[in-house]
Image: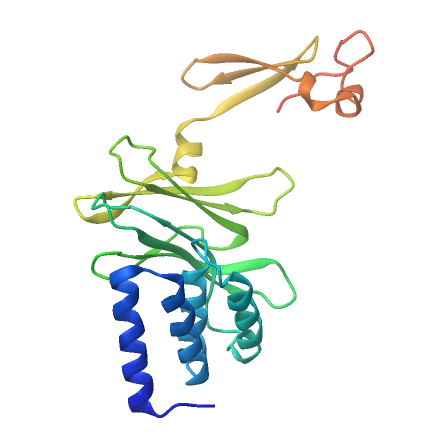
Length: 241
C-alpha cells in the first residue's frame, strides 16, 4: 500500500533522525520498507545496501526486499556493488564507503565503477572517479595503510585478462579531502622488471632500479613445473616472464 506524500516525508525524516542518533538496524530496515512502499525504489535499494554493510538481524528480510525491488530498477541506473563502513577521516564516526556501477546485461562485466563516500558526521556524499572504471569483481578493503589511525580505501578491479592483471587504487583522507595516493597504472609504469626462469625451479626478477630477487617456484605444483622443467629441475627451454 502506497503512502501519501506527507506521511512519507515525515516517516523518512523520523527514521533518518533515529539512524543518525542510534544507527540501530531497526530504523534502517523500516526506512527501506517505507521508501519501498512509497514507490521510491532506488532510494530503498540504496538504504538496503547501506544497512547490509554492517551486521543486522534483518539481513534476510532486507535481501528478500532487495531481490523484489530489483525487478523494477532501470538497468541504466548504477547499482551498489560493494559497501563497507569505516572511519575514513579520523573523526571517530563510521563513514559509509561504496562502489557503484552499471551492470552489463547477461555478463559479470561492470562499467562506470565509481567510489562513493558518505561522511558519517555530515551525511554528505562525495563521488570519486576512477581512471580505469570498467572490469570484473570490483571489491573494497578498508584499513590503515598510512599509519594515521584512520581507514584508507583500497579499490581492486579484475581486468579479466589471462594474466590475472588488476586495477588497484588507494585513497586517503588528506586535509578533509579524499585523495588518491596509489594507482596501479602509475606503479607499473615506474617499477618495471625483467623476469628470467632459472634451473632448480627458480625465477630471477630484476627491477629497472637494479634490485634483484630470486623467487622459489615450487609452490606452483608439479603439473605446472613439469611443463617447464625436466625431472632433474633443468629448464627445457629458456623462458622469460
